Image (cartoon, rainbow, N blue to C red; front, side, top):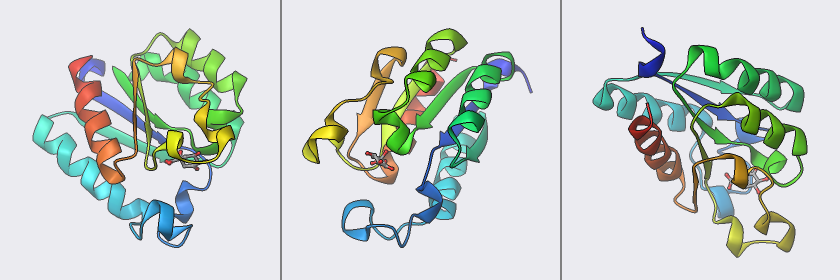
Length: 146
Ligand code: DQA
């Protein structure tokens, strides 16, 4: 399928633990359940979606670096790397691919250190606080930029 019909969805560290990880913040939904909903919206929008998760900063960096040659847009929940990774910010800046930052929780309603996103300036926009819908809205937004 042509690159302009393909969206890469990246889940960062600890998102594989969803379902049992701090359910009072992230709910009981698992990553598999989130991915199923993402795939359903991708079908509705007639785009191909590839979904990857990693707990490793370097792996996420490599995927971002490679993304522009294979995908038309990127949806990323960088997890805690949102608040710490200048390397991820630099990779997103360089990749030249339209990217949407998403978070399940509202990062502005939580601890001070979560209120700063180091990647925010390297993405088109951010969707934060809508649970699984942050991803689904993020995918819809990404498709506008394909
Ligand atoms: C998160 C928010 C981050 O602060 C946290 O480290 C995560 C998940 C979210 O989706 O709400 O791992 O990105």
